[in-house]
Image (cartoon, rainbow, N blue to C red; front, side, top):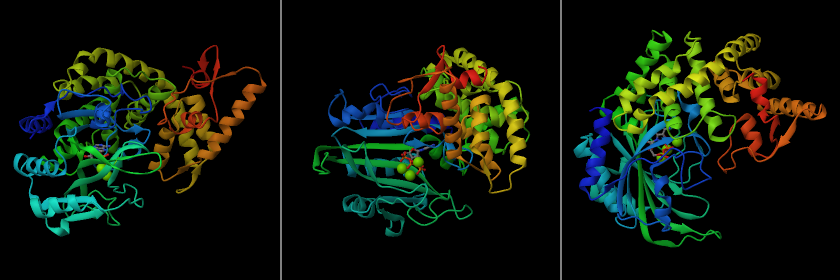
Amino acid sequence: MKTSEIRQKFLSFFESKGHQIVPSSSLVPGNDPTLLFTNAGMVQFKDVFTGKDTRSYRRATSSQRCVRAGGKHNDLENVGYTARHHTFFEMLGNFSFGDYFKREAIQYAWELLTTVYKLPAEKLWVTVYQEDDEAYDIWAREIGVPAERIIRIGDNKGARYASDNFWQMADTGPCGPCSEIFYDHGPEIWGGPPGSPDEDGDRYIEIWNLVFMQFERDAAGNMPQLPKPCVDTGMGLERIAAVLQHVHSNYEIDLFQALIQAAARETGATDLGDNSLKVIADHIRACSFLIVDGVIPSNEGRGYVLRRIVRRALRHGHKLGQSGTFFYRLVGDLVQQMGGAYPELAAQQSRVEQVLKQEEERFRETLEHGMKILDAALAGIAENGVLDGQTLFTLYDTYGFPVDLTADICRERNVQVDHEGFEVAMNRQRSQARAAGKFKAVEGLAYSGVDTRFEGYEHLQSQGKVTALYVDGTSVESLAAGQ
Ligand code: ATP
Ligand code: MG
Ligand code: MG
Ligand code: MG
């Protein structure tokens, strides 16, 4: 089943169960200035859950474009390292606004997976929140999942991707237990079931999260029951596609294979299994859709996240031997894959290409120089060593290497980066600039949402440690990088 069919079958299934099909909203949330990007299907319905907004329907279904590359949900560091994480992905979801609750949500999910998608029941594992006997009993007694495949999970804070089966919108407001469905990709792959010490592995992959909004937490921590509980679910399209196409990694599905081949064509890479091709294929989706939704590469806020993703992709292209522009030429391939489902992407193809091409040209020369400097520095560092903060800062400041980009290169070579040293070097430059009277500090330029916690410059800005330094309205970074 092709990815596009899987998406369509999901929406049609829930439509047949009385759900209104709602189009994906923008990656830039229209209703929440504190959120960097839309990172789940429920974002466009936030106010409907709390009752602030009402709709003509009480059941909805969508395939929502999401980005998790900054803020609370940041999977940028996972791309190229796990089989299941993207910066951009589509979240299939069904929603009940005070209509059905746990029983129907679980029944629908099971019916879709086992009868429409025809997955073998014995490969599916489920988790429920520790205290949620109601959900446990529905899975055990009504659906008939054997007890050894139903796992109770608490507020597990241990492992890197720790399952945490209690969901909350914010510190106050709607919250409740969740129940997640995992697919067992088989014993050839390393990893343990959810909640086990080896759950960080990729054998048991989480495919679907069912959230039961049951309580409303107040500032004092009380949690009375909501008068009309709601349901919010999210299933990663690429993950379910991997399962249905009998492959392990999301990067092996039809859509990604097409993008990986295109990336190989444009970079000259010959090994289609190369991680850099996966990263480029992932990043062209995130970058293109961010541009479609109005984000432009810049030095702050959302635009800086976009810039970081573009530069990361270009660095991987460079690693594959491509030192010219290439990234923008993948937009056409992406349109072929996703333009049908997202006409707004097809309509803006040439604009997206232009923005990316310009951004590529801007970084090309400093990338080449910066790589030489970094390679020289790394040649003198033993494995498990540390790249010093001054080099990290010089690369950032003079060559336009975002800190995460340098860290990504270092990680490939088992070298750490000295974030504290970076801050010291940044502060030193700042006070020198101040002393020379050349720069003036300008407040309030950074994106001010609470989710703004990028590494490096952005990070420092959000911490209130530095403000953007400007001369004649141009930032220090862009001046220094000769942009
Ligand atoms: P994981 O534990 O694997 O990081 P998650 O628990 O963070 O996933 P949720 O926030 O529960 O994910 O999101 C709902 C669903 O969206 C997940 O079950 C998964 O199918 C999908 N999903 C989440 N993050 C990603 C990602 N970075 N790339 C692709 N799909 C994702
Ligand atoms: Mg996650
Ligand atoms: Mg999870
Ligand atoms: Mg989850």
